[in-house]
Image 1 (tube, rainbow, N blue to C red):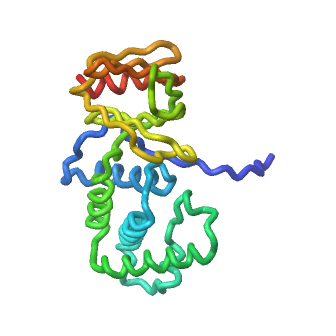
Image 2 (cartoon, rainbow, N blue to C red; image 1 turned 45 degrees about the horizontal axis):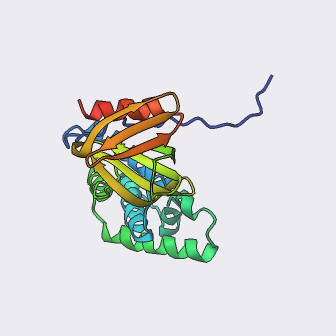
Length: 221
């Protein structure tokens, strides 16, 4: 019997622990790049319009680097631009101007190879403080906390970042806690508990408390 379902299956490479990848490891850099593009296009990281214009131009150069000598018209190239989730419901006028600005940047990057485009893209996103983090949506139960009840906890090689959440993604960074400031941490079935130098403590409720704890522990080994 013919299956009428048309579901698409995607394989996404996810880096669990973010450490520096040697530039000469071309295949690893490619995988890191593909994840970064996915994270930007799905609005996992907050990204300004100017950021996105530049990154989209690099991405377009990377994908079309091998096609520069073909008969691709500017219209067909324009159609290959990937619109990120955050702009999905924007007006046609907004999207037309966005694509126009991306094409202007694309022209400025003429001559970049696919490898150079990937490198430029990664250099740009690695300037973001929260790049390379694993994010957890938590309920803030910390005593006396001035932060909102819904938080995103971002764990990376440098420490933990607490951010406010908007539409499921990071909205604004509220506090940056390096590992050197953490005195102890632990978890229960539903909660992650962290004590910080100075007597401050965090109590964060999440079904992923154990995974959050294990990740913090892994970076501190």
